[in-house]
Length: 267
Image (cartoon, rainbow, N blue to C red):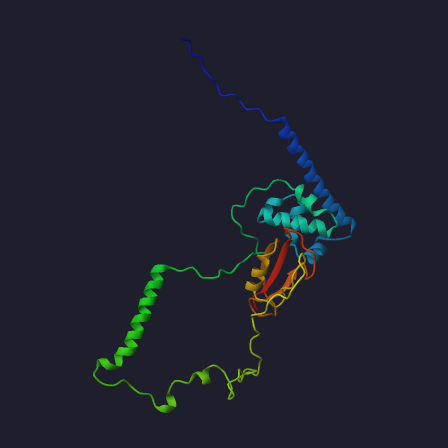
């Protein structure tokens, strides 16, 4: 029996796949040229586009240079290209289709100033620590109840004028039981209510998120076919309240559009 060595057959690249990849690369290059040329012919600077679209200039430069990997995640890259193309009057879906294939992100961590933050509904619970805290609370309650009787005599009684204030005195109500209209020490109005809700809006348009809490904006956006992006920034609005948005209320929305919500961190 004659033994002959066998070698693995070298796989040859698929000519059709190579041709398709080259064709798509041409479409991508055409997209980048069209975006930049359209912006320049319109007399718009990147600062103008940033102001109108609320897309960070760093990301606009990355799009025009074809550096899509510099954008936090593919979903944001597609959303920004779609919004940028529509702003320039180009076909948004055709522009997205011309983008190169993007690898999945190693970690979804947007750049500073464009950090998408979603407050968890419940904090993480460490079971051992929670058990120890509960035991300490129970022990303190038992000691509070039983300690005055351990010595065989009654506990200390506070004088009538040093007794604990009643609930009516601590909840800030006035003599009629109504909530005060201003702070008695400073004369300032009480903190604004944070239970505002998004007013009714037409389907396919951007709702008005101004003045609502972050959680309310999150709940509404979760039911829309868009890409939400939350930005925390200082403003005169109370902390946790939406003070600006992009696109503006009433603007037409397409599936996948990026909706940027600016949430106040306080003055």
